[in-house]
Amino acid sequence: MAEVVLGLDAVLKIDGDEIKNCKDLTVSLEKAEADASTRDNNGWRATVGTLKDASIEFTVLNKVGDTTFAMIQSLFMSGDPCDVEISDAGGTLLLTCEVMQFNVNQNLEEVIAADVTLKPTQSSTGTGVNVGTPAPGGGGT
Image (cartoon, rainbow, N blue to C red; front, top):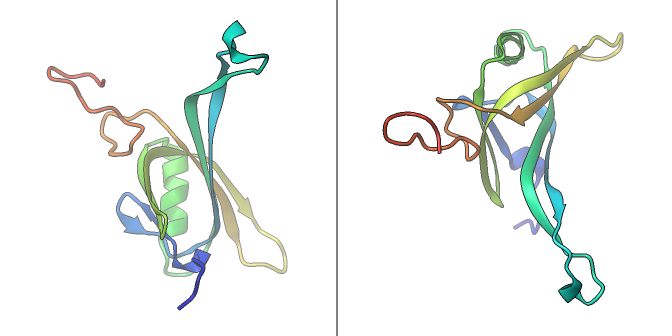
């Protein structure tokens, strides 16, 4: 049995549909920082994390008979949010995102492909961890 987890075993889903026509997916997670230093820190700067940020970047090929390319391009053009699920052996990340970049590459000696960037967004209907649970009487929390 392998002692490592291979990227090809990871899963990307958008609105519940598995995106198999995806390569080289990168998930970047980071936090903004706030200075919490006081005189009581013995001369050390104290930093606390504030807002989290995520960026999901991948390449999708334009394959005959595969609707993934057109679906993601349509999400970019409409600005509609989508629920994104990324799973590997380490767990699952579920975010409600917007397609922020859809860059089509038409190189002469390559398959037509698009470099895609997804980022968390606001949504009243999304199911991602970045979407608040509606409070009684409407509105998010």
